Amino acid sequence: MSQEPPQGATLTRKAVTQDILDALDDHKAKKRKRDPLKKLASFGRWLACDFHHFLSISNTILVGLYDEISSAGSENETDIPPVVAKLTEAQRKLHHDMYTSMLAHSTELQEVIDDPSLDDSPTAVGKITDYLTQQRSQQRSDHLGRIKHIVFTFLPTLPPPLQYLLRDDSPDPVSEGLPNPFLDPHNPDTPVTSLPSAPPVPNLKILASDKCSKTRRGFHHPITALLLCPHEHSAQFHLDPEGTRQKLLQGVIKFHDASLSAFLYDCDYDVADPTKGLFRSHMMVCTYRHIFTGPSSAFDSLASTKGSAPIATKHNLTRSTSWTIVYIAMLILFTLRSDSQFSADARPGHFSYEKYYNGLITLFDITDEDADVTWVNDTLAFYDKEVFAHSSANSEVQKTAGDSTGGLAYVRARRPSGGFADVLDAFKKLQGGKYRPKLSIIVCGKRHHAKNFATGQDHVTRNGNTVPGTVVDKGITDVFNHDFYLQAHHGLQGSAKSTHYTCIYDENDMSADTLQELTNRNSYLYARATKAVSLIPPAYYADLACERARLYLNNFLNLAEADAASTVGSGSARRGVGRGRSREEEQAEREKVFQDAVKVWGNGLHQSLRESMFYI
Image 1 (cartoon, rainbow, N blue to C red):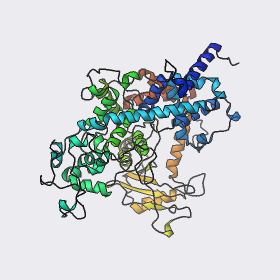
Image 2 (image 1 turned 90 degrees about the horizontal axis):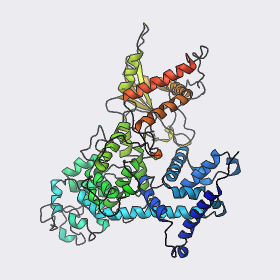
Image 3 (image 1 turned 45 degrees about the vertical axis):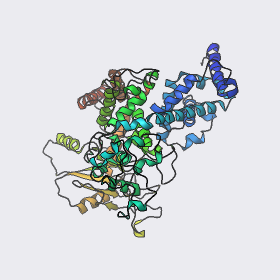
């Protein structure tokens, strides 16, 4: 039997909601001594910093409300909204998580959402979400205005050919015997006098002032070009600043929404570990402090802040989060680029800040099976220490969505997918007994960014995919490992994705052709299909068996996670269960789950099921 809420509480919520709606009406707000929008405005501005910056607030609330109706068993009374129907499962979960976080952070928004009188005013929620969206955009604009000059005081050391730009007398590069960045690259011998429209290169002081148009930044100026340059080309830029800048300007060196710029790093680029030093630059840390803990703390995290409380204090931000780190990276990127206006919806062929933001956020997604949890934890701990002057466990778990290519894809591709050494160690533990056949161990990978494109009509199907049995074993494969990409199946919908096979151990000394043919033929042996499947059946079966086991162990695993979360310490509900645990702790946790399951089930599977494929 349901209980009606106390009448007083209902009236209070109604009064709060009506005050907010009246205040949104200009002619009523002018007569008010108390501003009922103050807290809501503060929350709207915080949405720019520590929540998904580009997620539609109205859609987020719509998804949250619909999920609440569904969970209450009333989903048959309401048709699913088109906005909700269009979302993928991952997108819907992201919206739902953000909705939950918003209500947890703002009691005013919670009271408005709970107010039953909103049913009589279908436009009320729209007015409030529009106001929150406006405040979020205003906060971003204010922050961009705050750092548009100060960010240049956080510069790294410039290479010797660009040191002249640090002088205040704005020297002419030609008189200094340096290349003129505004010469025609196709006619380098053209005298400067024949190019009257070519302005002198602004020195740093002018570049950082209002005297210099923002359109002179980006790849049009050596300093901003150095900072924006994809970090894998930074060494080339230091050796040949002008030549590299021209390549960036002309698009010879590509810069897109997945590029990882030099301003993000605090060290030279490491091909073997592209995340080394990522997000740890002096510019990133100082800008983070300037925005969240106050301008006076930019160079000293322990400096006292005069005047109004910094934004981190107002919103009880005592730990770094991936949202705040990526938000700072986006602000710096726009400041350095030559774009005159910030635009989330980029036209085809133009830079997309939303894709850039989503791409960086995915690096912190520890729910991804390929995520480098150690790097995520170390990065958050680094900001905890550098900004908030402590280093105890950060309690954030982020669940994000987004796709990317280029530099971000390369970073994820370089991460150890489970670790080949761990696989070999696991097989060594299984050795025993007299039966010891020769082994060939092949690791199957589906989470990659390689796509096949047919080179002729003979190699393409009617829906545009490459034909089943397509193998790629050069060009995009590893330099040292014996690997190949095989698309064994027929792509019925969308783009067919191949499987990446890597041979990490081979006592049978199989040639590349033999291994590829064997793998392709085995792809036709799946028990529930008469055609080839995308993943070789032995691996497919193992994956299904593990998934079935996970379902059986779900309750035990949830209890183990809850126990682990309670040991990490308190933290906001939206920041999750905390940092990754050590390998020894994880092993002990697995052993505990196993022992708990043994107590309930005894010896596990029944004898009659052990030799069957019940899990498929």
